[in-house]
Length: 171
Image 1 (cartoon, rainbow, N blue to C red):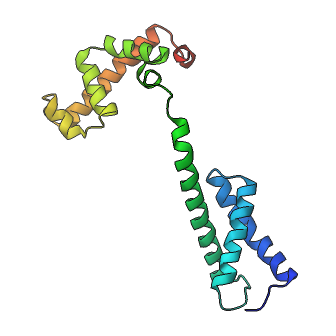
Image 2: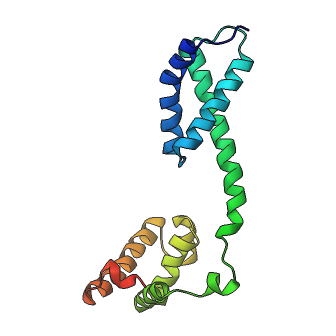
Image 3: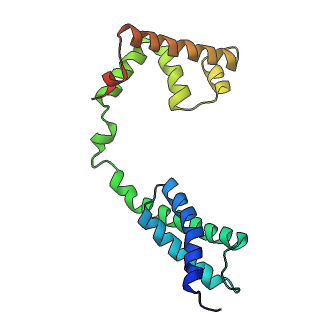
């Protein structure tokens, strides 16, 4: 395959790099990472194609596909490496409820045990409404939905009575 001229490389960078940079930026990457991804993608494109690179529609899409694949692979590898850094250092950090959690739990408990259990099943356990209706002896999933709404209203009313704001739940 013939070597690329400076003009051809300039055209490739002008057409291809902005798209790759936007993609990488939208997915949490930096400009430096976008440059690296683009250059790697360009090398792969150059090695894989048998015809001279002119980046018309088909090859431009191929270049973007290569860049996406490289970014996803790099992002997956970096998230695996930093995954352990984000874990709490001790078990107490993970299990000890915060001030905001304790305050919120208090308001949920004021709504009543049945409401607390229902809201836990909906939001924490992510049970389907059909299962919730059966578990709590409601006549239908719609009845369970109505009861969930009533429980949420009880909690909202308690919060309104206390004139609480979002900041009240921050530590």
